[in-house]
Amino acid sequence: EIVLTQSPATLSLSPGERATLSCRASQSVSSYLAWYQQKPGQAPRLLIYDTSNRATGIPARFSGSGSGTDFTLTISSLEPEDFAVYYCQQRSDWPLTFGGGTKVEI
Amino acid sequence: EEHLLESGGGLVQPGGSLRLSCAASGFTFSTYAMDWVRQAPGEGLEWVSGISGGSTSTYYADSVKGRFTISRDNSKNTLYLQMNSLRAEDTAVYYCAKERGNWNSAFQHWGQGTVVTVSS
Image (cartoon, rainbow over all chains, first blue to last red):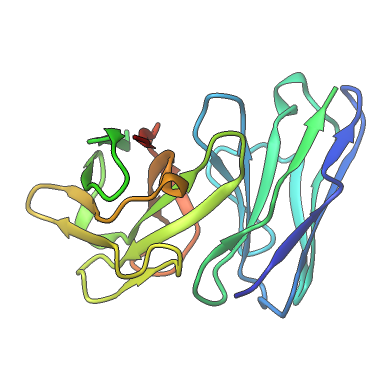
């Protein structure tokens, strides 16, 4: 099973600041990595698929990069609605796996 | 507008069974792979099972293999998860998710979830 390790567990930032979230895979997942956002009491929402492709309706302040085992989600300038938990997920091999999440808090 | 509505959750005793359903609308159901993802209370996301658009391929997490069965009825635009031999550790919110394509792609759209509680 491919293990995804997200860091940091919690990121404390202010609106307008830049957020950089990391996801490291235990083995290469090529470019098959996605990022999701989840707010309390809500279902997750797809932000980025296949490393760097923004999903429909996702603002340009969200961007993804990386390859192989190291990936990054960047939020260029945090908006109040961006404070949430973010998960990475790989589809390179079964079982599909998620990282443990990074909470972005004010 | 795409919509996914899960149902069938509830309280069940250990060793019992439940069948979850996910009614889909707003897209051509048969052309998309579908998955179940769960989230235990206060925990992260765990992929449970996936099925291709034509039901030719299915996969399961090791934690549910042999106990859970995923299926779909494309004539009814409905996804199912039959859960047998339930354990306390199966307690979670269960989400159905539509993939971006017919097989093995990101989870593009999610339902609001149905709660399963396994307890005596």
